[in-house]
Image 1 (tube, rainbow, N blue to C red):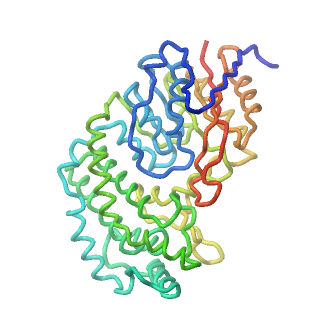
Image 2 (image 1 turned 60 degrees about the vertical axis):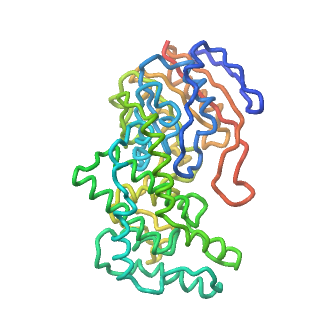
Image 3 (image 1 turned 90 degrees about the vertical axis):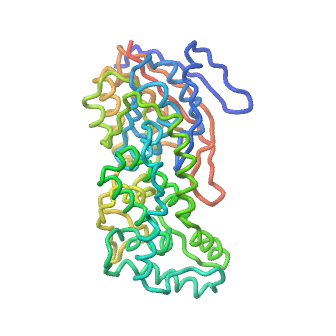
Length: 425
């Protein structure tokens, strides 16, 4: 039976004129400016003001904000100064990124990570084959031969530790030389952490700078679903440009600017960083405001960001094999499959989400779009029925461009983003 629950529809359209914010607390929920660190599909960075308006309607002072599907940490970045944030995502890299917005990294600045890593890089390169390095001028044939030699390191036995990226990813998104730098920077960060010269917040800060360097030296489009092949002279030239980028330079550049922001803005308000399935996160939750931004499409985020998950775990995972060959994407066999990306499971996934919020006596702010796996009207009705008479449910809309991270004409798509809100009466 349909419960007596109020539903409001407020249209907010982006443009040159800012929407009028009528809620008296709205000015307290303006997002702060924060530095983004990786290229991330579906990031909510561009609509944080809209989300802040939603928070102003349901949040109560000092009540925790739970970012249930935190991704690249836009909520922590934009609102980490306003209230305690519980940043959750089943992918481990998310907690690492969110940490730089929530916890001061007040020790790592004492160390020159690149200078410490350089001797490791030189020693490792000295024992690798000598024909792995990219020159400025190469024919297409010679370039592809070089790519194959880099990729052949997957079959090599290594005499040194910290060779995960050199073995798994040389000749894919990065060159062997770039991978040696990634492995060596990770080795230095581990050494500093294990010797207690830095704590976990500083360690995560360093890893985030390394994720940034990986993103901007990668020959891909910003994610790691599949690397590009050099099929033409033009594509070869573009790939080779990235092959010759310096991981060390990107790391250092981001390190300096990000550390200044972190030390000036990261306020420890009792924030928590967790890496749980959303249902587990909701199980023992105290009354909070839950912001939920689940995946919208049939593609799993673990397919696009498995490489940075592997960087954080650094666990030499088994790779997916098809037809007796490692798949081109070099995917982890254990990569997460979200029920929100599976059409036969998405409805029950939302029911579990609504039930978890309701059982914890929390309020909900849910982002979803008109391009999602479930129709937006069906989703609003499902929320209305699930929360029942003790909650008020309403929604607001905004039109914006959704970034697809591609290089083709559909790099940005116009979508209607909805905020579905459920507040306990």
